[in-house]
Image 1 (spheres, rainbow, N blue to C red):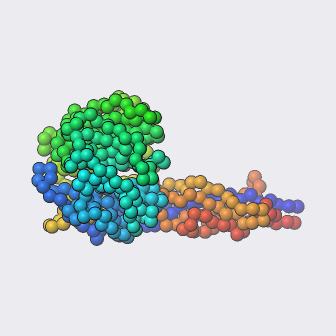
Image 2 (cartoon, rainbow, N blue to C red; image 1 turned 180 degrees about the vertical axis):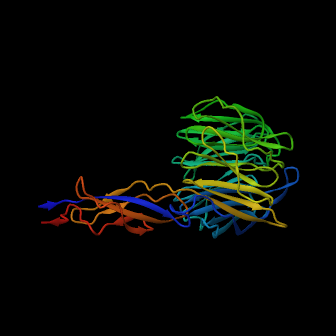
Image 3 (cartoon, rainbow, N blue to C red; image 1 turned 180 degrees about the horizontal axis):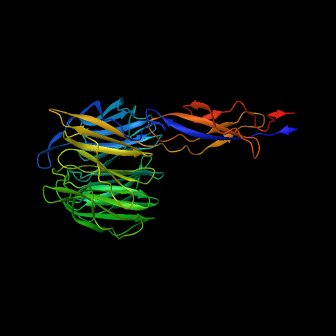
Length: 439
């Protein structure tokens, strides 16, 4: 009699420090070793600095522009600085974006938009491309990335402009606004083949004033007409969850700022009824909310509520949470947030005496299941099980379990077999196409 064995493998993943068996929620805030030195004299004499954040499997990539220039730092998930670079002695409107292979940073210095690229996780940077601007006062930059390259919007010479950068060549130039005087504060979002751009009709260099917020979409190869969305707003931005386009903005009245939300389907033009986020007005100007969408489709917003604290709000497609305070009562400002898988990462500046300390906090979510599992090998060889690397920044170990099914009535049940930091595992107990036992 010959007995054939059929073998099935299930992969479970674990995170360190947060695992499938650990707690889910906000980790303890970390005071990093980095500082930020604010520019002064902008927006009614308030200090000002800027940060942008991107996360991938290699770490947390923070780009900041302050009085000391444009600085890049890579952190691990514990908040420890792993790499530091000063890219330029001056600059503004920092943006960072990428994937698991390449990183891109954008910033403006004087009258030039610079794009730099790293192929080694931020250890070194090289100039990828630059673009001379027509005016001397840029009014914002934003960028999105897909397989067609970098989609860049920028405010320059009184209007908002779009270009696509692929490799080192610019394509598809389009003047988005038709203001000619003060349009700026642009933001961009992608949903499939659609491109969405928002801006403010009266955007000073550092967003001190409020005016009409507008959007314009590109569908296939055609730019649609611009659309006025909010009559008087400040600090607006847009984000897409793939199904809906969301606009977040403050209502200026004139020293009290209330955070609001609108949404519409990505292929529609009718916006929802305006909804207030949180219950407390922001009582100082110069703060812009940040937002991202996690893998599970939830929209996340970090915003200053009241005089100092930063709160985390979520939107599930129909309603907003009341908000969770993630910082203490000491004054916080200039925050940046990103999502990677279902984890959220937030950096902010804690007000100091001469310089401000950068602090950090992570929301550690249940990890996503590995994808792309396959079995390879030839007859007579041990089978190798492979899978795609998980996107989470703090991933440490994959746990492999095996269940051997002897027949329709008999199986071993799931048994732990190995742990590995790799994305493959070879089962040395079985041969492909071979007989496991004879009698």
